[in-house]
Length: 91
Image (cartoon, rainbow, N blue to C red):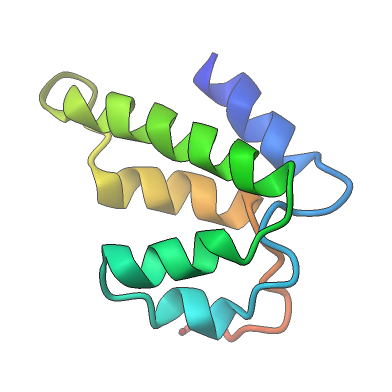
C-alpha cells in the first residue's frame, strides 16, 4: 500500500506542493514554519497534505520495526510532492 500512495502522489498532474517556493520548504525549521506553509495551500491540496502527514506520522511511530524514520520518510516522499527540476542536486 505504501508504494501505491507514493505512486499516486508522483502521478498527480500537478504536484501537491506546486506554487510553494522549495527554498521556503528547505528553510522550514519548526512546526510553526510548517503550519504557515500548509496554511498557504488551497483545498483540496491542504487536506490531502494533512492526510499524508498523519499517515507518515503513524508509519514513523513504528520505525523500530519498519526502519522508516521521519528522515527516511522524507527522502522517499519529498520527490513526489514537488518539482525540484530547477534546484541543484547538491542543495
